[in-house]
Each structure stands twice: as structure tokens, then as C-alpha cells.
Image (cartoon, rainbow, N blue to C red):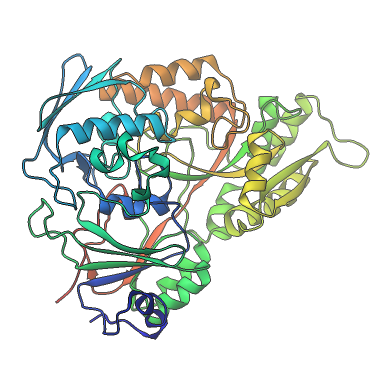
Length: 521
């Protein structure tokens, strides 16, 4: 059904030295992102997580209803006091080089992730990992850590072989195996040509029976999304992950040969928002921030600018999460209320009809969910006497330097939940994470002792109902304090040719193992 067409024959296969058509058990994925490397134990980001989740296995997997399932661990047990988690590993699992995977590799991986991964809170409570035998790993915690099981997903906890990545092989960030990885997952890395493609092949010794179903996955790296879309529409590639442009998604939905899956990856939790610099006048006043919120017609942004393709994000936790609180202040459009709040805050309209002027930051590349939103806001805020001057950074590093060093008034930003608030949400709101120069920390410089305490309590609360109540209160307070005005969930979608089945559709979307993918007979 699928065959290798001229577009890739001249690139990927030529480089691979192959001249025949691809087998039906192969899939070609297009991506615009170049992974720095493939070791998800020390590197975050969707372009690393996609190959890492297929090359490495993890202790657990997760269902589409957020339930943990066995993977490398055939069973697990959490102690009554929540201070130990015991994993019982499957017997007979081997790495791609034939070496056995043991509890020592699990302990080494957890220690490596804790020391090197950018998600510092993810494994912060882990004090040690005991290995009483080759198939048992006991994780010892300083305090209960309800996010730990989710952190054992393929996306976040790849189990890497100590004999390949251990200290005897030099500093892990310089280890050549980061670009030639060895794991125990469903696919093995066969070849990588940096900036062009990488090829994954079936792990014939994979520990799950009858998986993976594909023989090969080719990931072709393109210079831009436009080139990917053309290749997809021509049938030169089979699948594209993490498309988010409403304009592009609308176009692809009209193609009868393609399937557009948009309700994926709830655990990633990508939210697009407007961030306020809460230490900079006049935005240091909550009434001013709230007034700006009331001046914005979020329905117009969602339904017109974003063509109804981007779901509403009303608070800091993705609405697809079981911890989301939908009952927060909605900030429905009310220009009269917005103007009155600014009057009361001490910012009357001047002779020129304006109260004050702000700068709005985004990057040139961020058009639909960035520049277009700010242009709309500029027109809206003028109605209440607030000026908005757009400042478009030429690239991401320029934008990140400005925002992380608090050189901004308001900015469009995109931040991910990464499954559990402890992992991806807390970093934005806890006052201890106000860290100059660090992007995606608490760059709003937001401080609320009550929020700090709620997040600290929720991070150790093991009763699901009590934990949900703590996060509900946290979300209510944050939305009221308005260090951020939440706009939309980024509509990351997977688009693929009809006939391809088993495309990952769980809570991790395309950064989950692709061991069920196959072509219809």
C-alpha cells in the first residue's frame, strides 16, 4: 500500500544506500525539528521524546484514561506511608546489544534523570533506589510523591543501560551513545544523519509479544512545516506529528486521503497564554491585569483567529487533565467593567484618550497564536485607553533572553504541563522558582504564599480527592490573581495517511511508543 516515492528516494534512501521500494511494514514520519540527541533521560522536548520513547522502555505505560499499566515493571506497590515504591521487573528483558536489563539499570536511570533532567521537581523526593535482586527496585522517598507513577512513563523515564551510559564512559552529556542510543524499547536506532533523517528498525527481541508491528520507522527532517505539508499531501510521507496551526489543520481536514487526530496528548498539556510582568508598573496591580483580561474577547480569539481548532484553556492545568478546575473566573468580555477598574486603580484617561502604553512580546515565527493575538489585543485595549506596542523578536533566543530577564510588560508564551502539576505546572507559580535568566521558570515574578503552600501540600497529598481539592483552590487563586491570562490549548495534532492503524492516541500522544502501528491489510 505504501511505497517510497520520488521525494524521499532522492534524499533519505539515497543516503541509506537503498534503491528498492519500502516495504508495507515501514512508516515515514516528517518533522521540522532536529533533536539535539536521543537520550530522553537528560534532555526534554518533543523532538527528543518521540525517538526516545521508542528506543527506550520505561517502568510503566499509561492508558487513555490516565491509568498506569505494566511495561518493564510487571507489578508495582506503593507502601501505606507513601515513602517507598517497589517495582517488580519482567524477567528476560535485554537491551538492544543483548545485555540483560536489571534493577541496577533502573536505579542508575532514576539517579541520572534526577541529576540531569531539566524537570527538576519530577524526581526531587527520591532519596535512593535499593536493588535487593536483579528484578526488584525499591524507590525510597523523602515524602509521598503522587506524581511518581506518571513520571515512570516512556516520555519521562527511559531506562538506559548503565554499561553504556555510566560514569566509566565519561560525562553523560558527552557520551557518543546519546547520538547512537542503546535501549530496550520496541525499535533500535540503525542510522542517523544529523539534520537529515534517522532510521529506527524493529527490535526482534522486544519483550512484548508480537510487537512492534512495523519493521522500520523513518523520520525525515524538513526545513519547515510548509515542505512537510506538501510531502504529506503528495503521499511522499505517511505521518506528521505535533502540527498545531489552525490554518494548516483546516487545510488537511479537507484531504480525503488523510486522518487528522486532534484530541491527543492531554498529558503534555500545552497551553498558550498571555503572561504579565507582575513586578512592573502598572501591571504590579492585580486590578490592572484583570481589567486587561475583561477587555479581551477570548471567544473571538478561539473561534475566529484560531478557527475553532484550539480548545479553551481557562486555567493553569490543561482541561484534559483530571486535576483541571473548569469553575474559575471566565473574564467574559466587558469593556465598561475594564475601564471602571482602571479608573479605580488610579489610571484615568488622559487628554490623548490613553491611560498608559504597554509592550507586547512574541517572536516573528509565532504568527497565529502569537502575533495575530497581539494585533487583536492592540485594537481591543485601545478601546479602554491602553496602548500596546508589538515587539517581535527575530528568533527564540532573543525572546527567551528578554522574558527570562524580566525585560517585558506582557508576552505570549507557551508552556507545557507534562502530565502532573508537580512536573510542569509548579515551576510557573512557586515563588522559589523566580530565577533570573531561566526561561519557563516563574518569569512573571508572581508571589503568593498561599499558592506556594497549596502546591507544596498537593505535591505530597496521596488522597486523590484531597489532592484535587488543593489544586482546585490553587487554580481559583491563580486565575483571580492573573499573573497569566490563559487563552487556549495548543491543538497539537497527528496527521497520517488513511490505512495506518495503531497511531498512539493515549495521554502522551505521539511521544508514546509506536509499537502498535501497522498498515491495514
